[in-house]
Structure formats: structure tokens, C-alpha cells
Length: 212
Image (cartoon, rainbow, N blue to C red; front, side, top):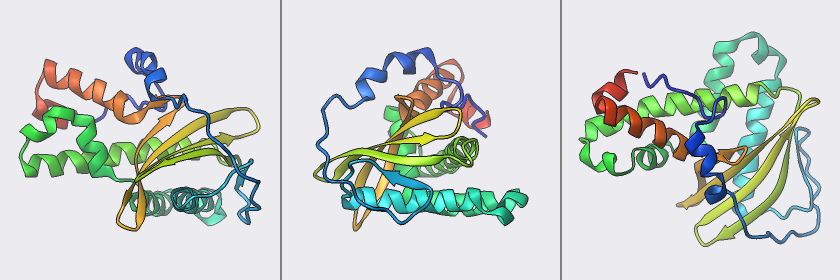
């Protein structure tokens, strides 16, 4: 069941120590501001690439779901809708593979599939919990950097009492851009979970990890 610490809620010391390695150091050039029709997301001196356009579409869909009055009353329907939208943008298999690192190649296809399914549920829960905690807030797209088939996009979720930074890493897959990692307050989800999973596997076993 992979019931482990959720990085977006409690960050390990090792992950915090690795923040600088994951945080973009290069200054990103910005174009003229673009007027955006969506109510819940805004841009500040931001030029949209294909990657940013794809990501913004997903973010707007997520915000539309969490602010829908009918969805608020029906938690199950809201979660199902969120999972569908998130699943279309997040590359959970790639994230699962990177999280297990070298252990991935030692597992059978069946074990890989089982781990990916459990990890997908865990990450969905983490992301949805974070977004739902900011109902009524707005998402600001701040900057982007595109290098070949990779894109890095910085956003903030701003509510009346706090702001949280989310930095997305995307890779072009066919005609779409898929998220393969995201950093919350500078801490990578993949790196954080990798630290936790590696520790469990060393102390117990891979099967022990799946039972948690």
C-alpha cells in the first residue's frame, strides 16, 4: 500500500539538504505578458511554450474541479475526476522507475507494474491533498525553460494566508509533454520518495515496501 511520509507534507532532512541540486540556478528570460482567459491561473511576464500550454491546461482543469460546488459535496466524484486529469499529464511509470533507481531493473515486469500502480495512488493522493488545501487560491505561472525535449516550469499557488512553490519537470512524449517530477518548496518528490523507499528496501525488502 506504500503508506509512507508524504513529501509535500513532511520533508526528510536528506531531501531538504538536496534542494540546491534540484532548484534551477539559471536565470530564465521572459517575454511580454500574455492575457489569460482562465480565472484561476495567471501569468506574470510569461511566454507560453507548448510544454507550458499543456501544463496550464491540466492545472486549469484541476482548479475547475476543486472549485466546482457540486464536486465539493461529492468527494468520491471529485477524486475520480482529479485522478483522470492528473493521470493524463503525469508520467507515473517514469516517476516510479526513477524513484526505485537501480532497484527497478532487478524487479520482474509484474513487480514493476504493481509498484507503479501503488506509487501512482500515493503520488495522486499527495498532489490532490496539496491542491485541495489551497481551494480559493490562484496559480501563478512565473517562468519556464525549454531545452530540447525537456521543460522546466516554475509556478506558485497563492492563497490568502500562504504561498507554495511548485516547480514542474516535463519531457516531451510524442506530441505531448508529461510531468516526470515536481518540486514542492524546492524539494523533489522523486528524490524524497527514493530516499524513503531505499531505506525501507535496505532494512526490510522490496516486498516489505509493497506491504507498507
